[in-house]
Image: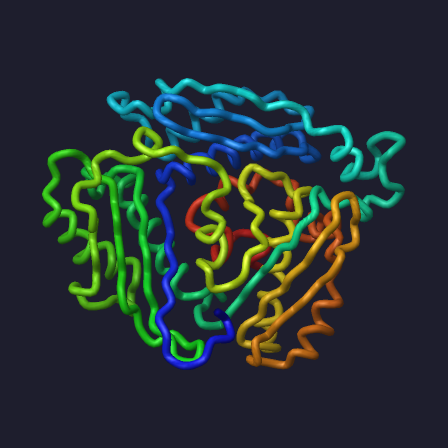
Length: 378
């Protein structure tokens, strides 16, 4: 998509933190942060499923931390806003089923850092990748955040729904929701926002006209700013009433919003999810570092757009390959030379970006990229 020419419309979506899949991502990242806060060397691969009155925790954790998994999960649900005891899925009433176990010994040995027993690597920088796979990072100068405009605006709309709900500004809003933004481009440059779609959960008894009035009159102008569009180009709750939502109505699972989490489909994706994984899992740390490197290419004016790919073998520190593309928007050879100056070994990435800190709950919602305060966005 990044190299497309001519006039076209590109669409990206975002989801609210109360979306069933995002509920699961947030619980998983809350579990990860709880372990890292006590044990920075913790290996965490936490998966979550939410449906009706049940929340299922599964996966593998090897950690010296003492964490009350049920308390962490309930706290995360409370923070999102699932506190209505009249709903099947609520922080105090949900049944938490815990199927977490220790990480497989073979994997633990393969990725172990130096100083932890006879099988540890002599050089801490030779820590092996926690899994095989490929990751992508992308940056574009079409916005100050170096993100594609459609996903950036879709996140602002979803985040705006949550902010208005939590501030008590709009008492009828409920946690679940989705947004979608369609942007018209000319040769890779955004011209205008063509369409906006907002689907928001609400309390029973609300008139759809009142919901539309607030979305069109307040939310859209606030979130889109100078990119705001005509009211007749905004679609609100197209299915009509949206009272039943969240895990009470739909099943949620970790890792099902990988395009929402990254670039809204504008760039390629390696397929690995982020949430619930410690940084030894290159699905997460590799993708973060690729974004970091792509940002540096664009910030330095080497290219207007850049996409970086890295690939790993499990237990091996050096990547199998590293690739950069500038899509004809800059100096391809200079970008390739620049990328070769970076150390893509997992331990080097973890050290450079400071990834052993409990920072991951901050990444779960409204995109892992394009937000200030995260080390890969520096």
